[in-house]
Length: 121
Image (cartoon, rainbow, N blue to C red; front, side):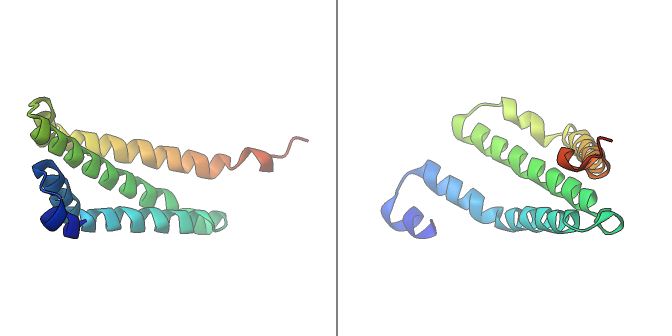
């Protein structure tokens, strides 16, 4: 997309979106790796899959960080000041709440297991 941004497309919004994606490429790779590690641990049997929800929760937090950055970019492009709310003190509690909810949900899913494997006797 960098080739399109400079040579063929002269839209400032497109160039700004490409610059945003370039700046957050490392974050996107980190999100992918965290979810991959969480899924790999999830494929193992019970004592070995316990770290899986931790990696899933960390991936969820970094995904929320990316989404909030994307919303801030949308606010800058549209001129809407509402998304500036995500720059301040509100972000840390959101990250903590997302981590706790994803961690609890991951462990509930881990211990409940898939519905097809339950013993109905």
